[in-house]
Amino acid sequence: MTALTHEFTWKLPARPARVFAALTDAAELSQWFAEYAEIEPKLGGAYRFWGKHTYGAPSKAEATQRITKFAPSQAIAYSWRIHDRDSEVAFTIEADPENAEASVVKGVHSFAEAPAINRAKEMIDDLWRFNWGNISAHMAGGQGKLMVDYGAADPNVTLSIFIDAPPSAVFRTLIDPEKIQQWFGVAAAVDPRVGGDWHLKMEFEKDGKKQTAPAMKILEIVEDKRLSISWPDWRGDKSVPDQRVTWQLSPEGAGTRVELIHDGFVRAVDISDYPFGWGWFLSRIDAVAQGKGIEAPPAEHQC
Image (cartoon, rainbow, N blue to C red; front, top):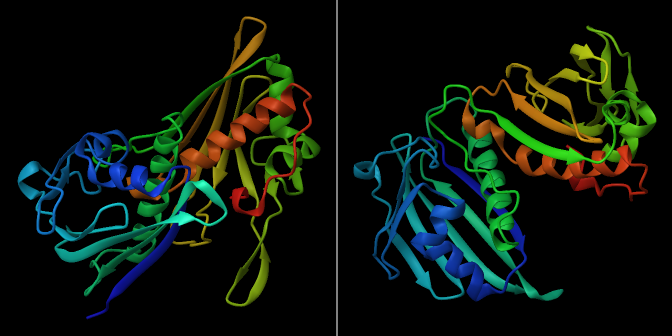
């Protein structure tokens, strides 16, 4: 029997009482976490959530979660059975010492026995990366939230943005290495043809050694209209099939409607925090296409 414990820390743009409400009010949970929820805000009370926006898409009858710790504005914990394994999710909430209007949330999701599935550790990590993005967007007013359908046969991230620049200018931000470096933040190399490299020269450490991310491959390229590239597993797991990222450009008035589709995920939870990262990068592509100056992204935004 192998235990599994996943720890994470969130910084959220709201005071502890407000964060606690987002974690314990059923109406709020249905806005960022689950399709349906029923909460009895007390120790031993129900903390039930279910539906297509819950991992595993459980039915109401399968929602048996209960509160195991309850300290208003300070802490909440609850049981959660996943893949026939009992687990507990625990949050502690503190005021952010650097910002009186923010909170620091520390979370622990623990299993006495890990789920008997492929990449269980990565599943839990990706689940809470996604939930962090959604609750952060919820705390900030709601823009940018995405409710994943965990029962979908073809899970994907689809985002849309209007850019006040012609398609030719937007397309250039996707294939010009200097412009890619402006919005992504690392050196790039592009061979603009089907089968050519689309390379973000990111460095990361694996097994104590520095490595450079492998090149993506251009799958489809139609000048000023469409670019599709392969997207390998971000952890470098070669057993995971490549995903695909596509930018579709359409004229709209004097500007361009850009639709980004990231698909090819083996399972819905693999979507991780991509929706929030891509939303942020689209805003930077917007600025670069319009010739606006932008600061280099911090390291945590470099996928």
